[in-house]
Length: 235
Image (cartoon, rainbow, N blue to C red; front, side):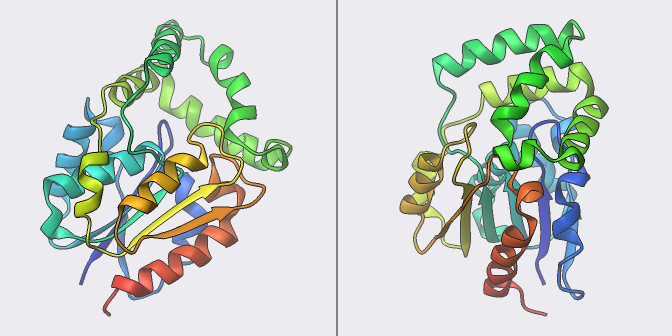
């Protein structure tokens, strides 16, 4: 039996998956991995996931978590029985984004979290989500809980991530690729690129949804995950 491993995005913790874990089949083994808080690179994070969880694994990652999932699959394709990439990106960092992240890293290490993150809420959420106090509070809680040093290190890991595109065509396991239609941080074109390269991948675009799709549109995400789990889960 496969174990489902949830991989949160940058700065996020288990709360990012709260709405999903409540809806899982009762006979499914699952865990939430927080390797992005303990290791310095995407490669090291992926290796830690494989080392810390034995046997066959299904990987569900959002944003940075999707990058970790792709790298884990590259390192041990024989162990991965399912792959879900939510609001993620197989491309390496662009020079433009590298410059923006480098500036943000300096501010994070100077303790200037609010100066960086407050404007980011409009980018992270669709306007519907940004207007919800409950979602803004959840978002701020895990940002503040992570702290400036963790935010800096995780952004550095994302900047140095490997290009996963050359490996996409080799993926054979059941794959879900999903993205918010209004995602400004990982635009839908990134998801379409992955879905087109992965054989038999299911592509889903969620309307009126930004980057934080597991929080913004939980019922839609849960329905997609339920169908995806049924493709590889054998009770």
